[in-house]
Length: 251
Ligand SMILES: C[S@@+](CC[C@H](N)C(=O)[O-])C[C@H]1O[C@@H](n2cnc3c(N)ncnc32)[C@H](O)[C@@H]1O
Image 1 (cartoon, protein in one colour):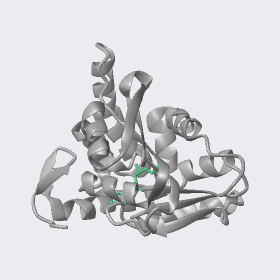
Image 2 (cartoon, rainbow, N blue to C red; image 1 turned 90 degrees about the vertical axis):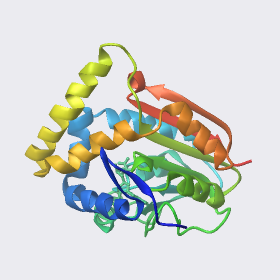
Image 3 (cartoon, helix red, strand yellow; image 1 turned 45 degrees about the vertical axis):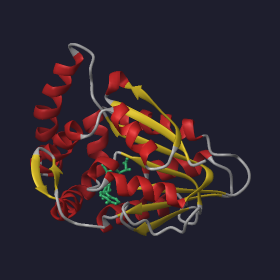
Image 4 (cartoon, rainbow, N blue to C red; image 1 turned 135 degrees about the horizontal axis):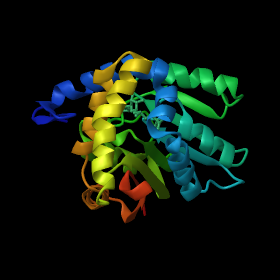
């Protein structure tokens, strides 16, 4: 895959080849405070959004069911799927950051889920999963960090079996008058300040906020999913559009 061209790292224009390294540096710096910061920044709402994704997935209570949770970080979504599914549900967390995976592995051990939730170092653009091996593929708050989103979407399609489901949770665009200005004020002022106070790193959190604004609008992202080969692509907005939950199927 060519590594040339430009993309965005937050509001900066950067070489495509440089973005992943910059993203990796962000998650290397924030991994130790990642879960606490998620709760503080979203006032706990990320739990509700992840629960909504797992409720939509509705993993079966019986039979083998394999899920690849890409950019799964510290395991939050994977643990929910494992707990909602039956005894033969397995979740593979694929993440590019060894620091995030290390936190996830520790959490899985503490929950007694280390046989059910596996952790694999891997890039969403070249998933370490065989063709047609997964019943479902999920990604939460990860896709906007990936330099070549179209390549990653084709990878999700490749690893899903026919009939398999793709679900993506990502920050979106708040269009509700009044709420949009409040959200901007909060995002650009409160979040970097929280990042400085709690994780000792305002810059990393500034990137996270800026990258949200750069991400395609929900319909444009739905069109990208369909262009990658998926069918029946739909989305719903949560919390006034703060978050979009996209669903699509490999048929
Ligand atoms: C905001 S965190 C989300 C973690 C988790 N899904 C959650 O919702 O709590 C984004 C994750 O994407 C991972 N990531 C970034 N680029 C990636 C890539 N190209 N392939 C796989 N993971 C990637 C980061 O390492 C990080 O763990």
